[in-house]
Length: 222
Image (cartoon, rainbow, N blue to C red; front, side, top):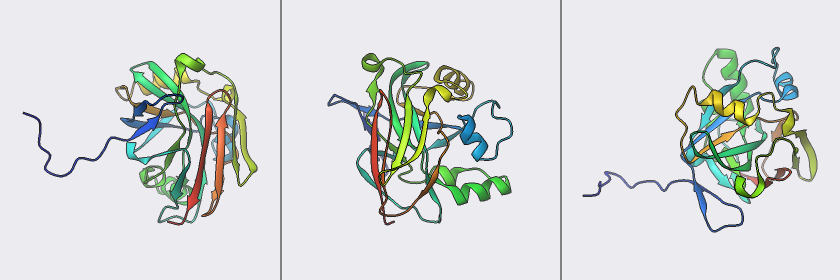
């Protein structure tokens, strides 16, 4: 007998798979903090080769490319962070790669850091994870270098190369697996280059990773 839910079950979040009618069902979202040297410095880090650390976002924070992202409540400083995203097919098994924007309530994050509190409200809010379609590794391979960039209203804000990551994808996944059991459907945001900045309602955001894909979204009134 199938389980009968006491309340309506929420649909499982999913991300498109490039060049296919398939979708990638999202189980969990993990994120790496300060994984590019220049971004680590702009965030005030003194040891840019410190071991990677992680935080999470809820699976239903994903927003498909082309979305209008509502400006979140309780912040006056929403910021963009363009990232290479790894989509897992199982423990240590990469299905593909995507482009994501790790949207951040920067003022809330700064206050949380100051008070020694968790980052959940700064990072894990609704609609905080716009993600492009997932490009299958079988089609594009496993990118180790390539330009990563983000524009706001046609003006370049962030630019770097994924080869500049302090901890590469294999190292990130190996370390993450010591903390969590990784499974099919997990997304891993791998960090952002320098140049993070403020977004306001009406902004048009476009970013990408060469050889992986393009992400586009706007910022709407909350």
